[in-house]
Length: 329
Image (tube, rainbow, N blue to C red; front, side):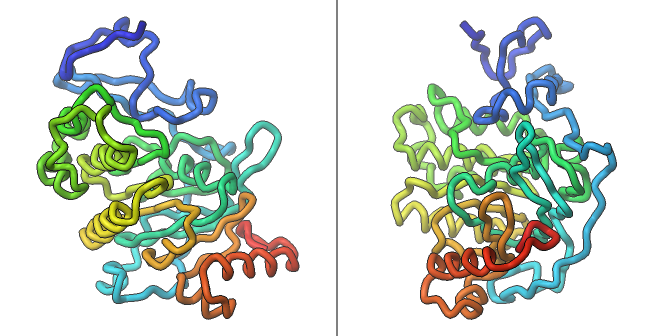
C-alpha cells in the first residue's frame, strides 16, 4: 500500500519509493518514467517537478520562430488591443513519434500572449500529444519554445498550468485542502484560495470532500488547482467535456477573464462551436494542423453555415492538395 502523508510532512528519500507525482497523473508512465525527479522545498515540504528537459533529438535549445501574420479580433483579444505581439509558445517543424510511427507531422504554430487558442479536432488527432509536448512531458523533434524557454525547463515549471482530462486531485480531501496543497507547491506565486474558489464557482462546496462532487464540479477543482499557481500559460485538455451548458458558460467566462489578465490559454475540444469563444483556432486532423484561423474567417472562407460543416470542407480541400511544410496540406 502506498504511504499517506499529512500536508507539510518532512519526508526522506526512502519515503518516496513507489510514490507517483500528482502532477503526472493521467500521463503514460512509459513516456516519463525517466524524465522527472523529486525535489524538496527549502521548507522541507514535498514538491514535484518535471526535471528532464524534453529537447529535440539533436539536443538543441528551441529557437523562437517568426511572429504570426494572423490577424485578431481586437474586441476580444487583449494582446491585440494593446499592440503586443509577444509569443507565449512557438513551434517549428514539431514532430512526435510513438515507437516507429510518427503521430505529429512537422507542426508550426504561434500562440500570442494574453489570448485564447482553441485546439479543435476529432478524438485521436493528436491534440493531447501536442499539449503534452508544450508542458514538457513528451519527447519531440523540432523546435519548441514556451515562455522563452524549452518545454518543462526549470524557469517555466511554476508558470505553466496543465489540466488533463483525468481529474488529478485527491478526492478524499476537500477542494480547499487540495488548493492549500497546490498553493504550498507554488510558493510566492500562489493566489488567495478564496479568490480562486470564487473564480471557479466552488465557494459553497469548498469544505466538502471532492468525492461527493459531480463530475463537472470535480473538474472545476482540477482547474482551480492549476489556477492557484497563477500560471502565465494554462493548457487544458477538453476541460468542458461532459459539462452542462450553464457550467460550460461559466468556465468560458473564467477563461476570458484570465486572458484579460494577461494569461495565455490553449484549450482543446472536439466541440466545434467552441471555436467562436477563441481568439485563434487550430484545426487538427491525423497529426496535422489543417488551418490556423478564427471561427469567423473559417465560415467566410468555406461558405459554410456551421463550424462543423466548415471543418469538413477544410478536410476535403486538404485531401486534394499535396502535403506542405508545417504539417499542413
